[in-house]
Length: 112
Length: 115
Image 1 (tube, rainbow over the protein chains, first blue to last red):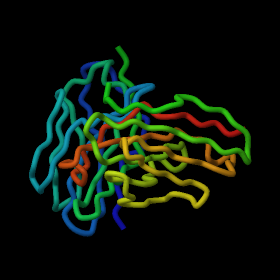
Image 2: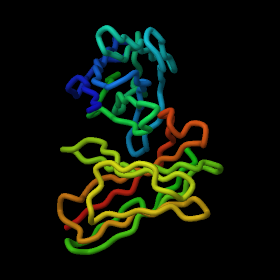
Image 3: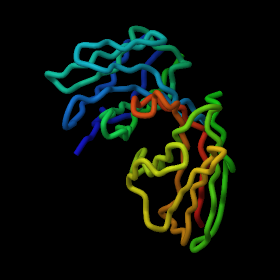
Image 4: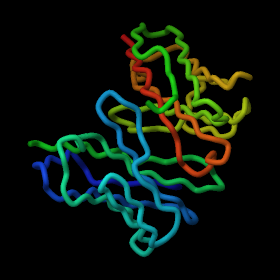
């Protein structure tokens, strides 16, 4: 079946540190890949997406590149802020199936 | 604000009881999805409706049912509640064009506590 595996959290960083959250996937076919973010007390929000191999999604200083050869979609940010503290979910969808499959989520805490 | 409205925000009930969670999608969105978020299971897809019809079913228990009404709002009914049903239940919606693209708009969730 289709699945998404994220690095174990929680991740704790100081402000302005570099962030990487690893995500790998298993899928039958060619999925679209996503990062969603959940701020405290809120629902999930789409952060960025990539629909085909080698595509780079980017938003709010976050980036992720769709790597088909390593079945990965790692999230990166060069300089995190306290306001980036949230839970980050990697997800995939196979268009023909229409079901968005999420990873377990990674808690990020950024200290001043 | 995503435009998706869920009620109630919090609900505390006892085992064996039945509850109904309500969701109003963003204006114009035809697809509604229900997800369950718990500490041990993570975010699990339950069911999807598109313009009133069931479109996809995930890990939804037989004790749970859902429907989408002509005005496009949706309700998730949970019956014979067990302690393990305690979770955050999210509703999400998407536009007709984005129905299978993974671009969902989530509500803030309904937190269910079963005592």
